[in-house]
Length: 108
Image (cartoon, rainbow, N blue to C red; front, side, top):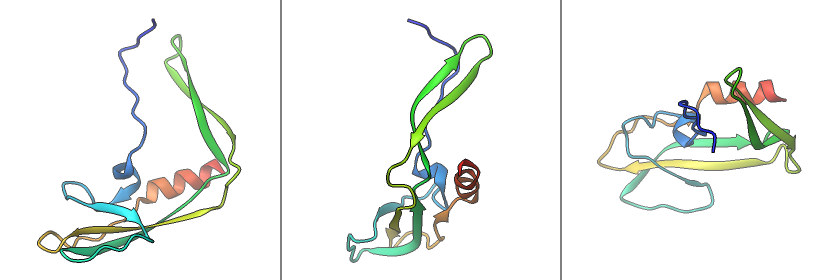
């Protein structure tokens, strides 16, 4: 077993959406209907990139982590989501992170 002291964490919805920090937020596919006691606080669109990550390679000599990618057969597909919070909670809007959009554009 090889173990390094560094920890690598894959992005979660909180890394790709803004307006969720410290707030209980429910993010669901757009086609799922939600009624009271929820209020809609955002609409998110995620477009699949041209490549997908299938693994990682870590070089212990250089401490470099490299993503291994393959072509994405469903590239360009749009996935739409709505963000909700309880009516008694904040109405702060939720949107896609600008950083995640820029990263997607750089990959293509």
